[in-house]
Image (tube, rainbow, N blue to C red; front, side, top):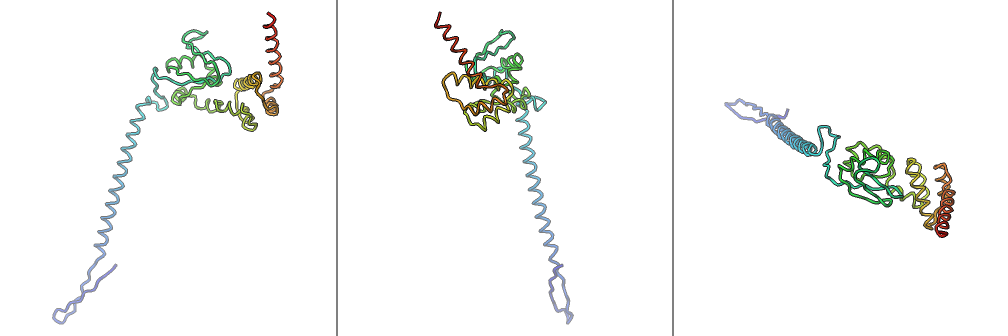
Length: 235
């Protein structure tokens, strides 16, 4: 404890007065601690308020179950075809209901969510196999497709395989499901028929994964197309 010594003379008697300055120091430290505590409490109150505001904002887009995203039936949703040929999607079975036709790979259409729900119910295999892709994260989440979509090849993956980069192409082809592999093989065939050059070494590696000689399929398709053209010209 710090002490200050003050001397006074009273009738030849020396009196020692002890002045304790420690109390003042302790009181000052106590005041600072209280102020710091008040600042922390104020900060915590602000954080709780911000968190409450975020939760309220989140509730506007979610049902009681936070994973159940609300989507208006009249909202337009982008849908992309990954089919190399013409793709028809209908809102009812056997081609009935509304018809949405995609004429080429990568084509995008805007479809009302209410119609898309019926398409999903009517074409579950097309959806799960990646014949068409829903380009809206809220719809993917709403229908529990997150994991399934992580496993599907997207348009850019198809383009990487078809671009001829052997390493990327082989790795992505391995990841593709059976239907998407069929579509990739069909795309290679279409390119060959259009006179585009294709890396034969790449086709050989892909053939081993595919289980069928892709180059032979290309040659057989060329022969069949040639036969049809001769038949047509003979008419």
